[in-house]
Amino acid sequence: MVQMNEVAKIRQRWIDAGSPACDHLELDQEFYLGARDDDWACLSCGEEFSRQEVRAMREARDD
Image (cartoon, rainbow, N blue to C red):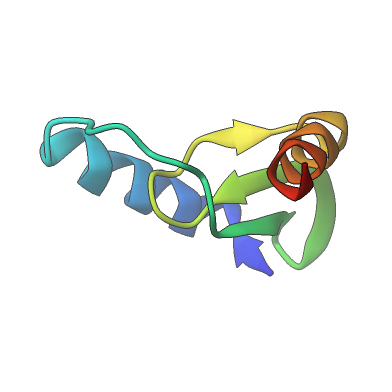
């Protein structure tokens, strides 16, 4: 579980590092003030994804 404000910090650090490619291997559900958001976020680069996108990425990795 990761808060939206933390995702923003992660994203800014990633941008400051030159926005290298990311495989989005570490995904977690996003929360806003303790309430679940429908989005998921990459804990490496801060990119946000819908539940369907996360499911598709996980299925692609399992192939």
